[in-house]
Length: 144
Image 1 (cartoon, rainbow, N blue to C red):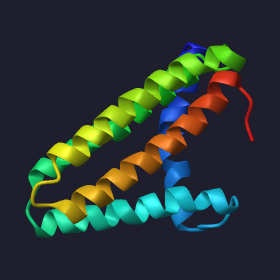
Image 2 (image 1 turned 45 degrees about the vertical axis):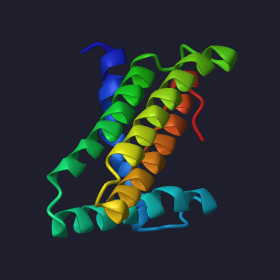
Image 3 (image 1 turned 120 degrees about the vertical axis):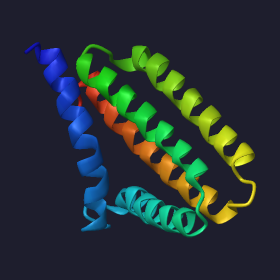
Image 4 (image 1 turned 90 degrees about the horizontal axis):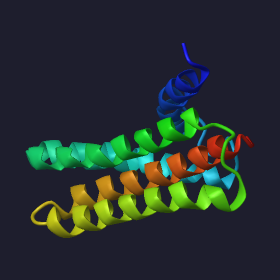
């Protein structure tokens, strides 16, 4: 297997594990661990409210984590090949796409399911932030 593909697959499978590991230890990596912890709680809350309200249209929220996984896969495939200002281009494109999706998500899906949509948007924002951070470390091959 190509090592670049191996890096991409490893990061794609590791990202959700790292993200959800904050549930077991919310302050395990310091105060920044609260971001995925709160996002995980928002995911559970939004999913429960969406199920109770029977809103299958809320499944559109899976697009944002999918975009995050694609970004991390690209970062894994290009591991160590971008540093400094070169890192700004893919990171900025990812941030703009995620922001546009979340704004659309909040504006057009808010009708009748404010609590569920807000909670799922919080989860998507926290997952995207976490993916952006992991992707930036992978692009530069500079891990904390």
